[in-house]
Image (cartoon, rainbow, N blue to C red; front, side, top):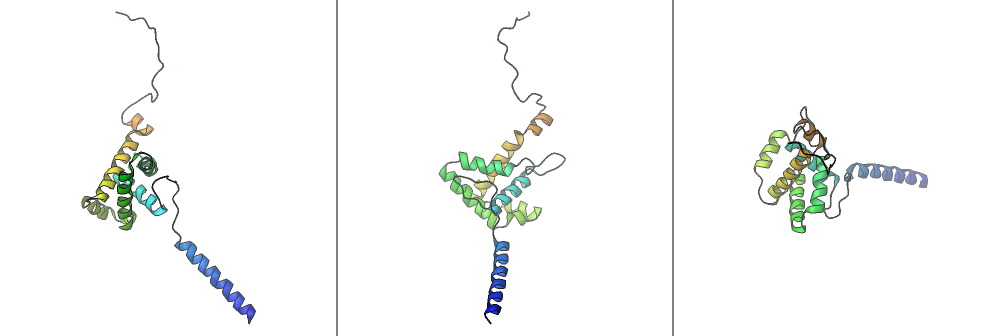
Length: 161
């Protein structure tokens, strides 16, 4: 009888552990100092940046790791009050399931924003555009910048008239 109880306990514990592992929330791949972040929130930020600048024949925001850029900038640069608005908006977007919405639902959701969620969206949009327009591929292929580093300084050069 004791052996059966031991086997049953082991099976129940194993099944419970497997179930809990499936329920465990995915951890964020980056760690921030000021803003608490979960894996679901990080994925939502990645989806939001890709919604703002989608992939075409040119790389999208996800290819340029724009979500990580936006999160690090929000963590490092925003004031505590702005970070609170950012967190509040992030929680609303994640709670509404933005990452799982269809493109039409995303458009409707973004167009109906007010308050902290709208502030959050504007912050993410600004960071997304900043990261995209400062990427090497954009600068070389769209802006035709041939040399990303300033050329060598030459002090004494004769001037021809």
